[in-house]
Image (tube, rainbow, N blue to C red; front, side):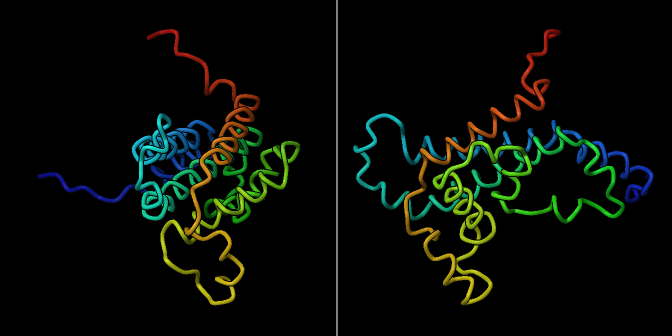
Length: 192
């Protein structure tokens, strides 16, 4: 029976640079997360006859944080796709891994880096900050790492509705930007 070993550095380095340095894999990850969030949204907060669900508050409380986590991660990956499309050597310059400035969950920072600072408002900033809190904390854990952090983030906690409209607006802005910087990701494959 043949023995299998871990891939060598020579095997994994090209794959690391290809996957990390191409906008396509970032966009694919983003689309997968968005699809999961959409399925959750369609199940818990249907677009038709939204007031018929008398248990909507329960969905907000139980699944709102998961929806916000998925959308925050989807928007983060899409922003990173746009950044990589603008500078596909961002990963190639890395000697040990993904650069620290790129390995962030700060959606506001990534938003600006992706060139979306021209599409900015208080609502967008607040939504980015709120999604960031779900990605780093409230989508996964009940509390922050410290009491001080908790005091600063309480207004973003899971006790509010998932803000579907503003989150979708953020997604559309990022998708539009990605179409500008990486139109090849949206071209139909003519061979199929």
